Each structure stands twice: as structure tokens, then as C-alpha cells.
Image 1 (tube, one colour):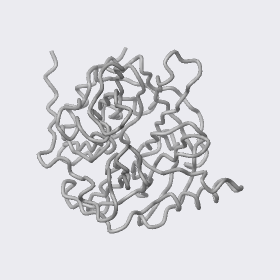
Image 2: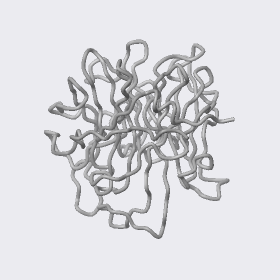
Image 3: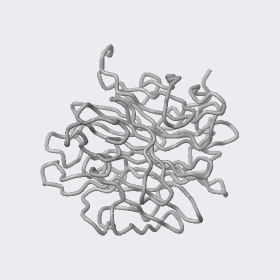
Image 4: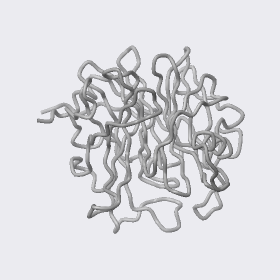
Length: 338
């Protein structure tokens, strides 16, 4: 029998919340995190102007820094807002579109590849949800490289080329041909230049995750181990008869779990190990109650030299929390697949 996985929530959780942000903020969550230049960098989703009925005035992306990955200082202004997105999309698309084409940008993820910082994110548009990839040197200016066709999101880049190609996991949102419209899967794509993406391949479906009955998707960018790519996922269980805590007036019925899988180092579309139960289940007050209660959404993984893995996750769609485990224990928790 396998020993229980020793995963610890940090005593100071949540490590970032709206009260830490020096500009308008209602919710601060789903943050990408990297270690770079001797410090930790976090980009986070910031929903602001909550109207008391589940709506918000807007969403922007903020930046925080830390010497230890625990105590964070938020920069005085947001780094990316809807107006910035409109300018870049017009440049990329090269044609006219309605002024209100872009609704919001959110859910950033960070990856360092060959010394350069890349950010993936989601963009809501009038035509659907798109996934974007950009690069930056200073978090002041972003060079947008690509935006997917709708509907796609939860893009996460691998930290190195595989077979000479850049690789990403993504979560397309297919609706037709499904008994359950929200049975979204995880797919893989590759690129020579981070602009043109193709060779799309399926990775994992909802039906393969024992604790999910609804959508799954990539969570944090993968980390490399000698056994394979260690990959967090988010997985959803929906119970229409169980209303969960949350601020949404229509009610909230979806539990979001953190999950874990191991994929082949050379063929990242091939899953070689899967944790059969959740890596993290909502248990604490900050995970169970918030804008959307019972939500855990991993968004950043840092592998320390000691073997400790820092797992940053959105808690209740409200704040950023931190859990830790040893990399060997995480790999061991993924049961081999035949």
C-alpha cells in the first residue's frame, strides 16, 4: 500500500488577497508564479468593483514580488488591463473590430523558456474565449505572440522545447457531439515559433479522472522530473442538488479539485501516471467560502533545489494560497498507466 502523500498548506494562507492590493480589488486569485533573477514573481487576476450581486466593474492583471515565495509585495499599479488588450489584438488581427470586442483578460500563467519570461492568459471576446501567449522583459511592455481561435483557454507552456518544438497544454471547449456539454478535455499542441500552433493531440479526458464528472483542464505549467513531466490539473465535480457557499446569486454547485498526472518527457501527450484521488480537496475556510466556494485551482509550481515543490493555487476564486510537498512524493502518488 502506498503511503499517504504529505502535502502541507502554508500556515500563513492565503498568501495574497484583495487586502494586499494597493488599487481597487475585490478578488485576487489564479496567479502564475516563477522564480527569476533571485526573487519570486507573481502575476495575478484582479477582479475589481464588485457590485454586491455577483458582477464586477472589470478585471486586470497585477504583479507581486517576493524574496521567499511567501511574503508578497504588490506593485502600485496593474500591469495589463482591457485597454492594453484591445491595442494588441488590433495589431495582431490586422483588421477592424467593434470597440467592445474585448471583455476582459484574466487567469495568467508564467513560464521561463531559455531565459525569457512568457505569459499565457485567457481573453473573453464577443466571439468566445481565446487563449493568448505573450513575452515580456520587465512586465511593463508585453509582446503578444499569438491568440487562439475560440473557444480555448487554460494554456500552459512547457519550460523547454521538446523535440525542437515549443509545447503547450490547452483546454478547448467543445460543445457538440457530447452528452454533457461541459465534459471539456486536455489537449496538447506544438509550435516552432510560439506564433503558429498545430499538431494538436488529446491528452486526458474527464472520463479518465475518477473524481470528476465535468470539465478538467491544465492548471500550472509542468515541471520536469527524471521520471516525467509533473503536471497539475483542475477537475470539477458538479452536484446540482448540493448548493455550495459563495456570493453568486444563482448559486454555486461545482467543486474544483487539484489533480496530478505524470506525462512522458519526450511525448508530452502520453500520460504515464495519474493520481487516482485529488491532490487537494477544498477543506479550509478560505477554500470553502468566497466568491465561489469549494474551489481549488493550481496555477503555479516552483521546484526548489531541496526537492520541495511550492504549489500556488486560487482558493474559492477569491485569494491565492500555497501548499508544499516533496517532488519524489508527488511523482510516487501518480499510479502508472498501462
